[in-house]
Amino acid sequence: LLEKNRVAGVEFTDVLRGESHRARAPMTINVAGPWVDEVLRDLAPSMRRMIGGTKGSHIVVDRFDGAPRAALYVEARADRRPFFIIPWNRKLLIGTTDLPYEGNLDAVQASTEEIDYLIRETNHVIPAARLTRDSILFTYSGVRPLPFIAEERDARGITRRHFIHDHAPEVEGLLSIIGGKLTTYRELAEQIVDALFRKLGRKRLRPLTAHAPLPGANVEDFKTFAASFVADSGLVETTARRLLRIYGTRASSVLKLAAEHASLKESFDAESGAIGAEVLLSFRDEMAETLSDCLMRRTMVGFERGLGLAASEAAARVAMRHLGWDEQRAAREIAAHQDYVERLRCGGHD
Ligand SMILES: Cc1cc2nc3c(=O)[nH]c(=O)nc-3n(C[C@H](O)[C@H](O)[C@H](O)COP(=O)(O)OP(=O)(O)OC[C@H]3O[C@@H](n4cnc5c(N)ncnc54)[C@H](O)[C@@H]3O)c2cc1C
Image (tube, rainbow, N blue to C red; front, top):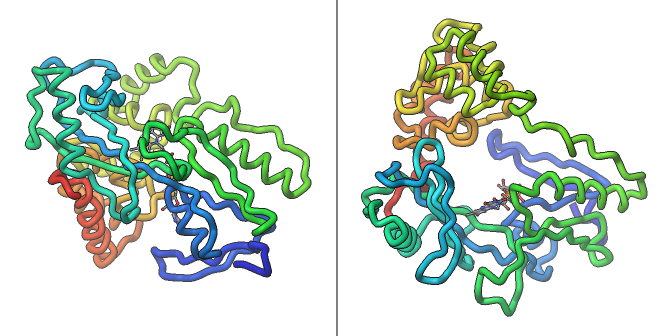
């Protein structure tokens, strides 16, 4: 919402419900990551470019003989770039690449060249791996929201630091975040809140989360917590250990939900062993809105070999029984999940 040269809020569409809304605010922050420029383009087509995103792809393979037990840092032979071979989710995560990206941000996929590069370099450092394209369970890619630097041709030369850009005096009431990493998200959030309060002429707040444990980590001695959870939960040991691995101390919240109905302790996915109560947790406590949110970004079921495709029907049945979904919603969500995971299938798309 632009009023003269001031951003007075946003107009947005709730894409799940197809409704448009307006929200007015004294300051607006553009946190669209690699899409920052797209948001600004709607505001003022002539705004200078801020993001020069680079694409990074990973491959996921089964553990092989001689696979590292801890994360391995490797320098690629071809271009001296660092990449990692990391034990992850009982598999191996290998990546990443780092290539300038100008394509469609909504359709990013690993290319054949990236896949072959990661296979070649892994086989070079661990010859017993003998990886081929057939070894790949799935791939995934994203675009890093790095600052645009006109003269930089080598992605390695682009800084990984983040910046808070104030669009004043051209446009008042708007800050954009350029860059930012997952690992430094809290520090960045603190800096943004400080910048916001400075702009509003308010006194700085004491950050409440600086020393707060992350969700699932609020215990002094996790080993002791885990041992008593396994002993007392009444769940089979593999299920109890899965809950501890995925949710930390929040495994207790899953157990509480499982008490609502005997069927909620049953697994809805043979591969991961995930139980029905996890579906409830993701929608009731973790703000999941879609089945893909639940399978990919909450329960991790979608990061198993089957990408959660076989599990999606059973998970939707749990939602029908306990969350009030009707047949149409279940069918829609299952189809949407199938569409979503297409991008993870290996095949190499350029
Ligand atoms: C391959 C790869 C590897 C990485 N490795 C690491 C690592 O090892 N360590 C690390 O710390 N970081 C890593 N990162 C960086 C990290 O993932 C990103 O920096 C981080 O996700 C940025 O968070 P963000 O919230 O700023 O942006 P995003 O996570 O991209 O979120 C932006 C959000 O804005 C939404 N959006 C866009 N346009 C609109 C619009 N018009 N209206 C409403 N919403 C919109 C998008 O849907 C998206 O949800 C990696 C990134 C990639 C791609």
